[in-house]
Length: 373
Image 1 (cartoon, helix red, strand yellow):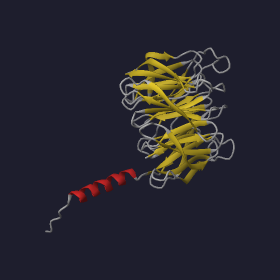
Image 2 (tube, rainbow, N blue to C red):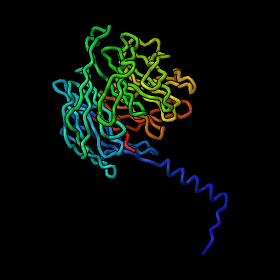
Image 3 (cartoon, one colour):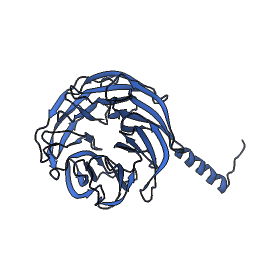
Image 4 (cartoon, rainbow, N blue to C red):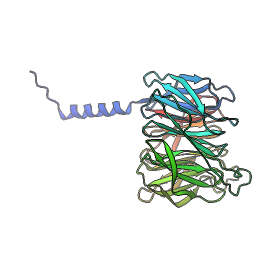
């Protein structure tokens, strides 16, 4: 038997090669859209993390306004809302993680008008959809073949707040399941509350949390919500006041400790925030501003979770409805709904700042971006 001896230099080269292999990675990008103009439905792209290029792979047509999407934990199925006012829908799709092909399986009622957000629990058994128009949320079971059954529960919110144009009635805007797969936080733009529920993963039943809600500043309009990777902090973006509120999070409870603006002090235009995400390393938080057409960058204090403004980066497009930090943490992809493009930004992992790469994909009315690793 021949013995193989490796020098120190050879070992270093092998380690660098292995590291390079791990960093040389492409993933599928799912794009939810509005079909008002030329979009056909849900699109699949492949994103190259070495070059920043986006390549079209496939699409699923035949559905109306699949604006927001979510992916099963086993990556076999995709679920989307069907955002219509007359009677909202929820769609299920089969997804082939090897080829990137996506195929419609079935459609169910969302239990209310204007569904705008959807998520799936960690057991892959329950899909929860938020109905903006109806001010309600519904739980749908995932069947053995990945398709959706009829809703087993619909919860109707009640109430209003001080903005007489936007807050006359409830408007559920997102569904956020905590890492423990039990706490469910539901920002309601119309009532200025973040409702809290407890999910029973065995039967899919939602019950009111303790407390049943956390109130935010009147007139702020809470929208999207995210957890810090360490699990001790959470953040909500408030559409109407152009602010972000930071919370201490413990099981079932939120305690606000900071509210910070997303826009420059001299800005006098429309306040119209949209999306919010924390970088994978937990060091920075990003928030999108429609009308101002920018992404706000904040540094996160690792000890307290407090935010410090870093910059506002132009999105090189119009109406950044949604954005995504890629799994490597090197890029931010922005879905500009009204300029029909997805723009790619390089992220400086040390400063958090963003730089437009010049790379882009043309997609009609992109609304939601999700990575399939």
